[in-house]
Amino acid sequence: MFSRIAAVLSLLAVAAVVNGEGCFSGGQSGDCSSIIGSFCNNLGGNMVSGETRTQCFNVNGFKCDMRIINEGGSRVPDVNACFEAMDDEASGCSTGGIKTINDFQFTLDPNTGSC
View (tube, rainbow, N blue to C red):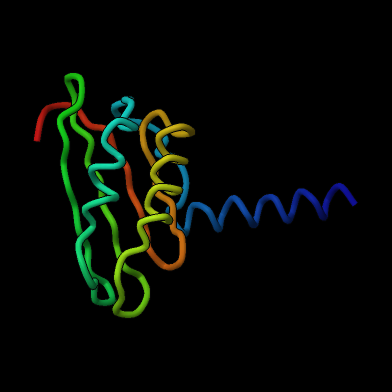
């Protein structure tokens, strides 16, 4: 029984690495939560499949790089998914991270320097 659980956990860990999901393992730490609304409320209109949109914000002596990638078909970005993903990354990942919801991949990444 234990070996089955260990095998499943190992597969999940590999899947997380392959998909690039989760918290970044290093880099600048910083709280980007104050600008999530500025990013998510201004995602713009329709995104074609594979389209990437990025924004950079200066926050308390560092910058927050934020990105959305449409991994699905042509459609309007999901604002609620943006808030959910970015809030999860800001509260659970001190150095930022990546989360995909409904085929939109969201990245929040605090970095040194300014935009």
